[in-house]
Image: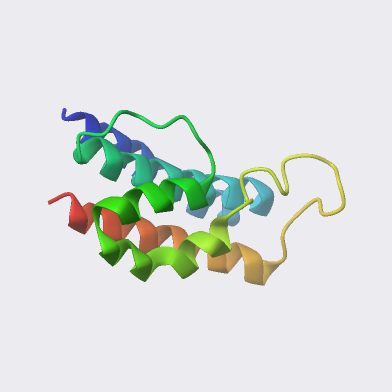
Length: 123
C-alpha cells in the first residue's frame, strides 16, 4: 500500500471509530478521534506530495504546509479550526469532562469534510 494510502486508511478508521464512540456515549473519545482523522488526512496529503513526514499534532501548522503546496486547502480551514485542540481538550479531567452535543456533531462533520477533501486531492 502506498504510504499516503496508509495514512488515509488510518484517518478513515479514526472517523469510523469516532462515529461508533458517539453511539456508545463516549463523546470525549469521539472528538479526539475526529481531530486525529483530520491530522492523519493532512499528513496523508503531505506524504502524497513527497514531503517528509511532519511530526506535529498542530492542525494549523499542517494546514500551512498543505497551503504552501495547494491554495485549495483554504476551503477546509474553517473545518480544521473547529477541530483544533480537540486532541487534548477533553482527554484530561480539567474544566470540561465531556463535549456537548453540538461540539461533538460539528467535530464529526468537520472530520468528514477534511477527509473527503484530502481523499479527492490524492486521487
